[in-house]
Image (cartoon, rainbow, N blue to C red; front, side, top):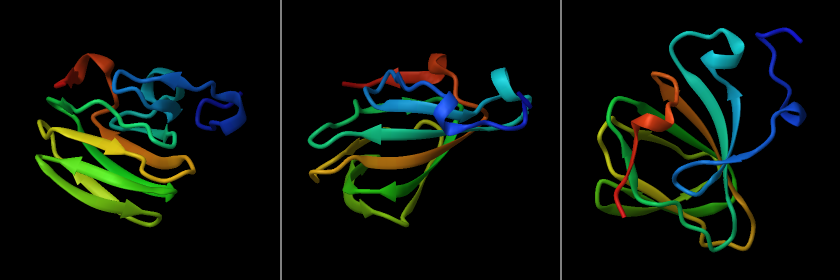
Length: 122
């Protein structure tokens, strides 16, 4: 398989430290990219990720399915399909799926996602 190509059906989901289901769509450890990673997170109906922060990683979340509540640096706000959220390094955040269908987010991390950079706060 071409390292620069990642096929969704070939990527097994894993459970991240925050409790969400993650598929690492593109990551330097597997695909040869350098400065960022891209993953899809799924938060199932009624599920909430654990409040956490990343000390060095900047994240962008882009909602591709569902709706929910974003908790970002102590503020809560509604998110839905098409919304993109900036999460600066060091910012506490969590997502709560308040709808009966899965909430799906594309998560872009720079530098690339590293579980060791994740601090659970609750």
